[in-house]
Image (cartoon, rainbow, N blue to C red; front, side, top):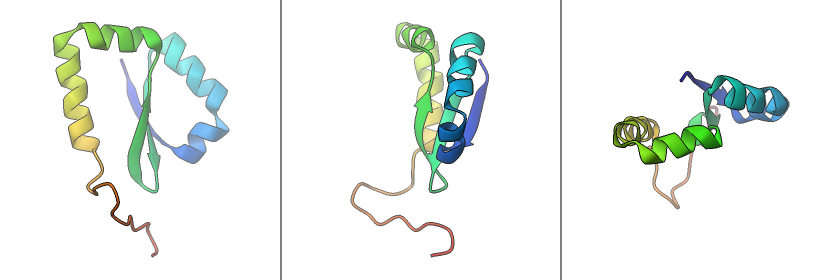
Length: 82
């Protein structure tokens, strides 16, 4: 399953196409906002498979750990140019 990283603006502007890619091609999208990964979009069938497979759960956990924002809840987030 391919994984792509896109901005939140790109997700908004291409929402229909992204849903098509998620459902038809099983593409997973990592959505960045303010230059930090914030969300992931995947199909329900991919989520079901992920939750039922220990190997897949470990893979996605390592992706989440790698992409997790480096700030803690409540801390200010500096955006580029600030």
